[in-house]
Length: 239
Image (cartoon, rainbow, N blue to C red; front, top):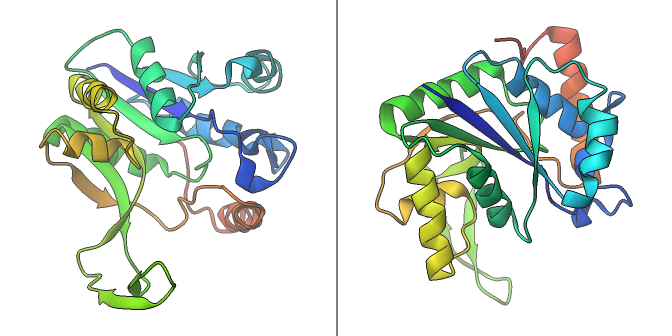
């Protein structure tokens, strides 16, 4: 079965407040996105990788990332869209339309996805058609009104925080995106678009280390996680 990966890295990174896009900031001497690509490149279940970035960054990505790293698999560049959802859709269009294939969608600025979690997500999508990583809510959740006052406390036992990767049958995720485009719906993640089709999405446990690097504080956290991996050998990537 064909398995394609779409790594989305087309954001402007405005919350990072840096002149350079966050996906290209250095983490341990390598662009952040390189760490992410490496996990997918080393996964023996993935057949092809599509990296979605701003079209004006193609030359930069080729020169500073793809041609400098010894990735095991070819990485094809796809132009990003105005929003993340548009970028994912562009990635879907770049894949040969094989309805029964699996598509894995991942945020390019989540470099600490573990290889075993990636494999489990793919396998789960093969079994259940749609699967995402997530972690149980670990803080107390409050519903707050527009003036900043607590309305009530939310029972957290059934609340999970969604992560990526998210994996789906190609036809399901393509239909979900096209339905959203017709209805002018913007989802907070790809799973939400699939849910709108009435399709159940399986959630499997991810990791609190699978953080999305969005702010400068996140970058400091990423260095701490990376140092822990080096010291303790946790979160290994090779598959």
